[in-house]
Length: 92
Image (spheres, rainbow, N blue to C red):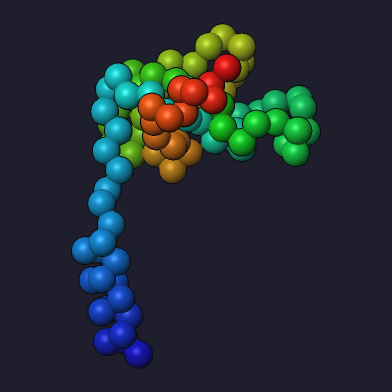
């Protein structure tokens, strides 16, 4: 069983590539990270796109507008999703 887990781990490592978010990239922010007064079911799943101002390891600093109130500008990379060119069509 242990040998199977090691084999599976090596297989997954060879197939995955780490996410690289650089300064200046545009990203979407997970809405569960931001406190809002509207019920969670009625909000959008992702807010943005926002520009990355600073990147330190897994923490990224975003250019959030003042309307986000006391939301932290520094977020973990797990709360982000890449903004792609096809997303610009749907961004109104």
